[in-house]
Image (cartoon, rainbow, N blue to C red; front, top):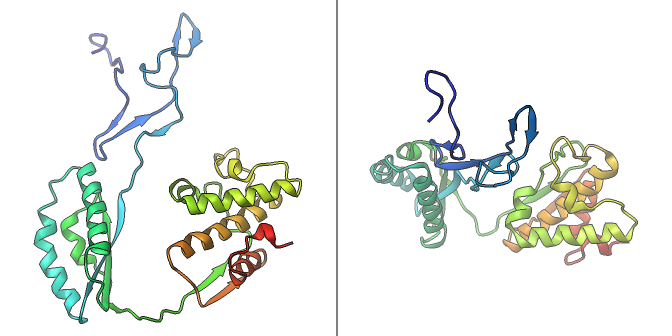
Length: 258
């Protein structure tokens, strides 16, 4: 469609990203007789924020295990032709396949002593995954994990946003911190601040960044604890000491530490 013999083309549908199978959403307006107007029908193109309508999950961690170290190499060879058959999948099919495969490997297979992993990319060549297996590592029944908590300097406007939207445990912890900050006379809302754009954020203001980082790290502790990830040691720098103390005092939220 369009005006004949010109480069004009009428847009009749939202942009479509062929390589990912995702429909884009964005703001639009039109002008008539030099008067700028906003579309009244959302079907024109849409009046929402720029972005993608679908949530993108292109990457998955895939973990394989065997009873002996050399078994990982044998697994890689046996999986190569199987994964090569999936190369004709579309982007959306690959994403779903990787989700299913990650679940099967982690929940429906025996977890043996020797482990390896690869990062599955829905937009990459699935057949090459076995070529990127990490070196085999022998797991232990008594892992020693340390958590290191940072002070200011590493903050950015969208930190923790995906975890906030995906995991209720993480969101509940942040909500508890936001509630406590209000009791101290805080004039801004922690959850609203974490949703702001790069141009609107106040995260680089220490009055915002310090409590944001502290609350975020406390929420990470709660999330990891819900997964059974418990460190044997914790270290904190500057305000990171608050998060370290939070772990050292189990079941006591920073809002209870006066």
